[in-house]
Image (spheres, one colour):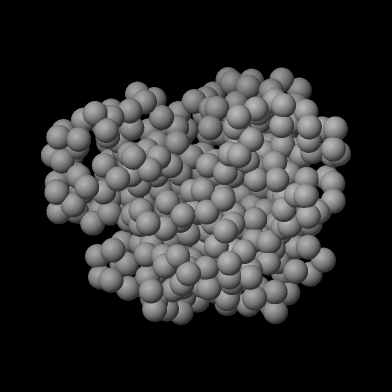
Length: 371
């Protein structure tokens, strides 16, 4: 089977890895000549989706499935329209994406439906977190400690003040879950545990979760409830934070995420791209995937420089060169890395597995070149 992955950044890396694990041939398209995911694909076509839509029709006609890995509504609209012209199924839900790509719109949904979420300033105490409404993940997030810092922040952003959400800062562990399906047929998948660097960028994903079974069920039910409210056709991820036993929703995104799908795949054997293919070609997904015997997985990002090894957020991967797939990489089972022999400065996403959660071990004690 031949699939087209549209976009070669972090989501494209995720899509390319999972597609190859499914045994699919992968054609990557990107307007950049050297995207991160290029080394993970069988073929590459440099193409601007908005400017080269006529050429894109011909590219897509030879494919069985299109996987968007882009966070740009105009580009997604064009890609969906061209895929329809070419008669190729595409894993895209523009309506849900439009809601979840705006933190203001998605937070309004939480408030209207009484879902647990962080309180808004000024109805909360300091510290607070300022989040750009239109950016996903940790981009542009700033912690603010007091009224003075908040006033300086408002002065700094000026007329863009209304583009930010100001919410209470909550100390607690964060968790993620994906939901795949369509109305009446939603499947919540494995819960994963998230760890962050000082810039609030996810540096490590662990599976299986350390949540209690009761909390895990609550989170799965919450994910399905949100999917029903959108209503979702495709995939979304939900991130929550544990506030003294209450799971509060931080963010939802109706698109293929990065990091967690690979973690879930290595822990459970469930490939979310295969589920999406079934959904968009057959109209449904398997309702009860087996989550009963998960393997332990650590999925983390490392930056190596002379004399130093750091575990940091995935921004270090986005700043890397083209990635390549490696097995048995300095103690890790697998790696996606820009390392070449003799390098003293490089980055890698490491995938480490074991029989259970306590079995995998970070590989920092293994001697890495440059470290």
